[in-house]
Image (cartoon, rainbow, N blue to C red; front, side):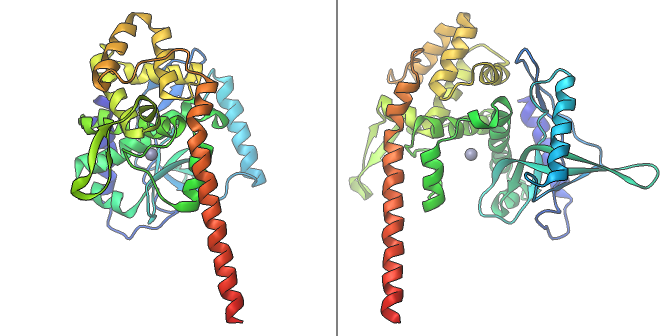
Length: 353
Ligand SMILES: [Zn+2]
């Protein structure tokens, strides 16, 4: 909860005083160091606001741009020499008029005015949260739960991205590619695959955990059919592994049932140490590291899932491969649809000539 309070106080204050129209690329609100992961994989969650005289600018061109790329390497090696395996996490909030709020790791420049009147500019690379117009409105209108929830959701992605080196981040290739093709988006009850459900479920867990809200048990059900004839039925064990809302619901149940005040920090340490690819693996590795909490974790997931989910410590690459098969099939269908549409458009064009 301390996280949420600090987050709310520090994040909402600079937004409230904004008067000028907002421009993408210029209106990064502020940047602050938060999390570090030490060599022992212990995570320290600290929140600090940068001084009011500091200002940041998101750089649109980072990688492949030689002078800046060299700065990144210098910066990384500097940090390593001070005993850190991961860079500190900065959450830079960029104000952008984009359709959805998102978080990606990107470069930005941090300006600090010096007493001499000049300014010191440093390059940083960190997760950057860009707020959509509607998220920004919710925050500025003081819609605490909705606005803060968005920020805590994105902070969840940011925290996770610091625990994994980029190539190991648990993103789903077929679901990511399919979303590029269809722009379908995602929602709590969407059944995708365990990788996608883990990364989004984790962010949704952070959203509800830090805003101290409950997720409804209906997240463990799905509706079949349309209109008044629609019937609800419980998600199967396999569907629970592939559904982001169900994963968030179970993580929340565990976090509240297990007596571990520091559970989020310990889960992040587990991520940094064992690089779990799925929520199943996150819970299994957490229990391995803290066997005294195993029973409480099992009991919490069994109760919350009505006995349909249990932590399988042997869940591995083969199981994940099988659980992802439908995602690849759906990607194939989306590609075929796109090709058909392109062919139709080309034929239409020929007829006109
Ligand atoms: Zn998300």
